[in-house]
Each structure stands twice: as C-alpha cells, then as structure tokens.
Image 1 (tube, one colour):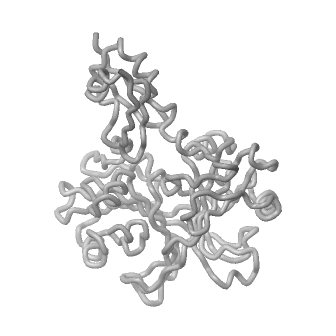
Image 2 (cartoon, rainbow over the protein chains, first blue to last red; image 1 turned 60 degrees about the vertical axis):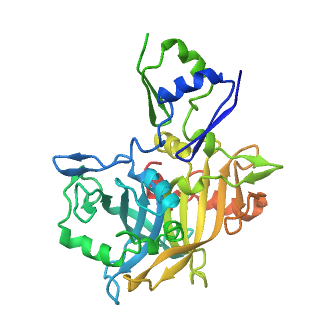
Image 3 (tube, rainbow over the protein chains, first blue to last red; image 1 turned 135 degrees about the vertical axis):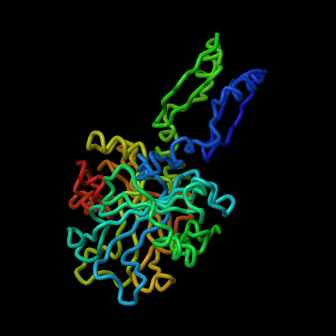
Length: 192
Length: 192
C-alpha cells in the first residue's frame, strides 16, 4: 500500500510520496522530522553566565524598522536606524498563540544613518552597524522573565545581562505585549 | 544494525538515530530530505507567465532599511519606509561568490511611516505595509536578466512583470552590483 503523506513542521511542508504506510511509524520514531525546523539553532546559549552571540541572528525574521526613536521630545542628538529581528520559532509561536515562548530572542541592530548615495538624492538608509543588543525571555536568567544584553558593535562574542534596573522597567511599563514593544512591529502587533 | 546518521541540508542539521541502515535508501528515495531547506521555497514560481507571490517572503533575510529615498533633490511628498529582504539561498551564494545566482529574489516592502506612539516621543517607524515589489533574476523572464513585479499592497497573488523600460534602466545604470542597489545594503555591499 502506498500513500502520499504531507507533514507540516515549523512552517515547512514536507511531502512524502510512494512511502509505504508500514514504514511511517519507523520514520516518525527515527526523528526524521524535528518539531520545528529552526528550534535547534535559535535558543539562547550561555557560557559562564554570559549569553553567547547567536551565529545566525542576521537570518532571524525582521519585524521592525525605525529611525530616531527617542523617549525625549526633542529626539536624540544622534539619530540611528533600528532594525529588530526575532527567532523563527518564537515568531511562529507568537503568531499562532500571541505568547512569546521561553527562549524567545529579539535582536536590535543599531545602524549609522547613511545619506547622499546616488541614485538617492533625498532620504536616509541604514548604513554600517554600530550596535547589537539582544533581549531573551528566560526565567532562569531573569526574575522578570526577560534579560537584556549588549554585544557592543556586534563583534563581541558573549555578553553579561544588564542590571535589572536599566532596561526592564521601561520594557515592562511600555512594551505593549509581555515586555516587547510590539506597538512598533506591525507583524506582531496585529496578531496580539 | 542501527546507526546514527547526521545529514546537513541547507544549513540545517538532521539527526537520525536508531534508523536501521537498510531503511536509508528507502527514506532517501522518499524525498524525506529536500536538497536544501530553502531552495525548494525560495525559487520563483510562475503561473500563466505571472510571478506567484512567495508564501514566505517575510522570512527572507533582511538586508536593507531606508526612509524617504528619492531620486529628486526635494524628496518625495509622501515619505515611506523601505525594507529589503533576499532569499536565503541567494544571500548565501552572494556572500560566498559576489554573484547573484539565477533565481535570486529580492522583496521590497513599502510601509507607511508611523510616529507619536509611546514611549517614543520622537522618531519614526515602519508601520502598516503599503506595497510589495519583487525583483527576480531570471534570464527566461527578462532579456536583461532581471524582471520586476508589483503585488499592490502585498495581497495580490500573482503579478505581471513591469515593461523593461520602467525599472530596468535605473537598476542597470545605478545598481552597484548586477542591477541591485547594494550601495544601500551594507551586508551585501561590503562583500561585493
């Protein structure tokens, strides 16, 4: 007996054709299909209590872009572009449930503002990276549930969490969803 | 006889444990493993000569962000955010070789400009999507090598290529690398 089996796993669709039905339990038990096609890579890793900079944060899913966001009315004297990416497994889970799972990581890339590069005679673009910060939802690392790390200009290999006082209170008070500023991330905001 | 088999496919690592060696040819032939975990999805697909909107363009790798880029000195009367993403297979190939492979797709997402959302008292962010355009490197579809498509606000399912006159000449003349504006995409610019 042959069968076409379609398996949906972490957003990917796998089609098995001409696979004898009798083999299916063996194939499934053999862990041919991971529960998510990304979860292997996108969970936080620590060394000596410091967060290890993820190898593939540049491949995470982009959910936000902004320029010059500032708490002060006059803005910041030094504008910067911000680009925010989230791990694929957390993106999928949040879009499905509205909840950020344990192990969620969000990367904030801070970039210099570029301008006057032809053919653009007006406007500004995100130029060289100046900073990389990562927020991690991990109850083991932070009593509040989230911890925040800076990797300098993005080249540092590990980072120690900021003291709870420096980022957490603003995120907790103003983040629209579970300490995350989803009000600036339409893909997440409109799903919460 | 049992065996642990590790398969590296498109950056993903699949571990098969307790899989009888005798089953391996059957499992492989059953297409359990795609040749790459991205190439199946990120090549252009056409229906009736029109490009099909890729299901997963939002998951492609973000390489550019800008606001208000304009060819005219005075700028555009209606600023917009632009975010550019590239297929994972093309990103990897370009970073390795400096060449965009056939089948490269770049998505340009155009977003309204949001502002005055607390806690930000200054600055602007990419709000709701207003447009989606895709550039495809495909010699079969365009004599120049690249074709350009608009999916309206992003909800249209297929798109017909723009006439060669409308996008190609500027891309060819000003795109720093093979018709692509890599001068605005630091991750690609600094690798060319």
